[in-house]
Length: 158
Image (cartoon, rainbow, N blue to C red; front, side, top):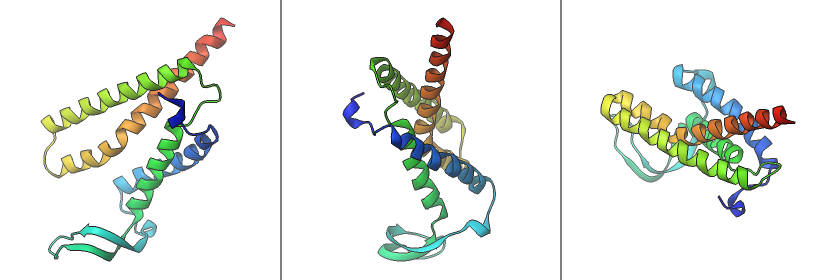
């Protein structure tokens, strides 16, 4: 992976500060209905369709933007965490980053294939919603796990 595409290391801390709270908030919003956390706002929509209502195209609409804000902050945080340089960015880290990304894509699409085969109805829409985030999550978890495991091995050898 080219170093030119990586963000400076200081973005990693900003990413974790965004990623952790939005992950918790996203999980809470997924499994319960927090009326107190709803943010309503007027946003520009290319297409807006409510059940039993006429579709709107290229208009400003009033809607709940809570999931939008949480999703955007989650993605920005995950991108900052996943694609910021390490303090010591060398060839091993670059190879590890690339293999973790490849591994994350394989696992993500394997899970998606299983979802296509075994999950139907509105549950499939929920799976697709989570699938938007799983490549980044799997990548971050695997990359940091291998880094941690490697740091333990190196410190044991000293």
